[in-house]
Image (tube, rainbow, N blue to C red; front, side):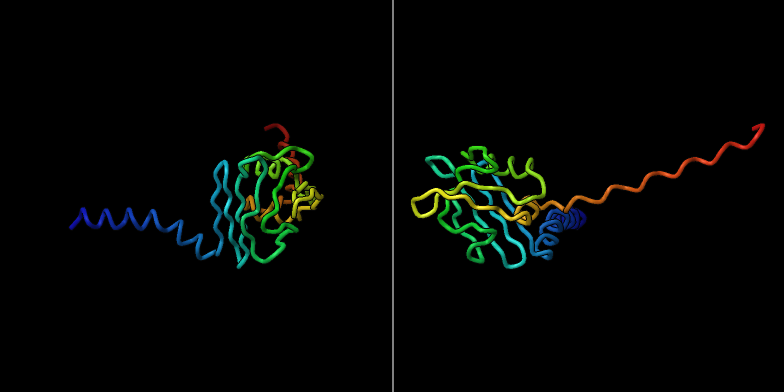
Length: 145
């Protein structure tokens, strides 16, 4: 009986983080070649293209963040993108402003601006916190002490 209780508690401990993620309606899974992200009814699936670049496999709603299913991301912020990992690294290094992407769409290359919200959402990062106020100076030491 005691052993069964330990197993039950172990399973509950492992499932708790997953249940919290589902409760928040947020999910992301990433490898070197794939990124799948879902939040609040939005979905993005990116995969490394065999010939280089990152294909937008599926997105909901259509044209989420200016991208379309079938787009192949060739460059991000002026840097070549060969794998999903390259895109994620560039997103992390870029900062909070919209990021230019070169995509191949319907056989032609074009420039697309990836919305700043995409970076925060895909990387699941909170916006930068404002700087802390300066610390107050220490009171002077009492005389003779």
